[in-house]
Image (cartoon, rainbow, N blue to C red; front, side, top):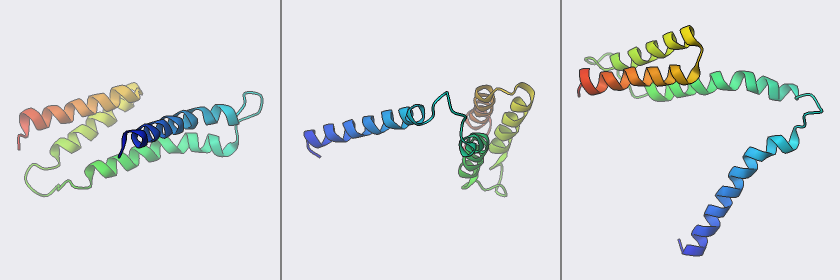
Length: 110
């Protein structure tokens, strides 16, 4: 790509990013109630995204071969426990990731 093409690509990406963040504020006003479909999506999308992330992360894991799968299961278990106890998404994700990374770096060394 030439330099002008790179500049145009970066500009279009920046414009798309700004538009996707500003569009909800432009389309939905504070004076009108939020449409039911938007409220529905706000309720179901977080769980759907986490479900997809779990499936994606575990798709190549072989649970029946040696100790494979144990760090993943421990990380998921820690994430679930932390979330049930504290109800803080960042703490749950960070804690589960820390457990998983600790296990694969120091205990289950490949």
